[in-house]
Image (tube, rainbow, N blue to C red; front, side):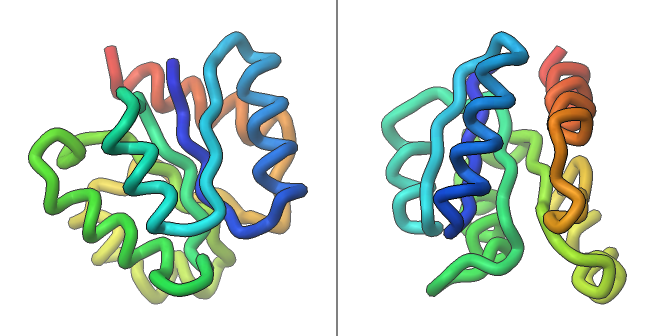
Amino acid sequence: MKLLVVDQSTVVRSFCSKTIEELGHRAYTASNSHLAIKLLDENIIDGCIINAHLPGNSGLELIYEMRSYKDLADLPITLMAEDKIARDFAIQLDKLKVVTIIQRSELSESTLARVVAVMQNRAA
C-alpha cells in the first residue's frame, strides 16, 4: 500500500513514515494541504492519514477538497484529532467517509498498524 501522511510536525511525519515502511508499505509525507494535493495529483495513493490541525487549510478542509475529486471520493482516510474534535465533527466526518479517527497524542506503532490494516481491508 502507498499511504500519505499529512502533518505539520517533522517528528510525526518521520515516525509515521518509518512505521509504515517497517510494516512493508510505501509512505509519502506532506507538511500541509497544498503539498498533499500535489502528491495526490502526482502519485497513486491508497490511503491517507491527516492531522485535523494543519497550518493554512485545516485537515477537514483538505478532506473536503479531496472528496471533490472523483478519483479521491472513496480514498480511505484516517483523521488524527483529539476527542473534542472527533465529537464536534462526528456527523461531518461520517459524511466525508473518514474511515477511522485516532488520537494524535496517543500515536504509536500499534495504532498505525491497526490503521494500515483497516485501510487494507477497505482497499480489498
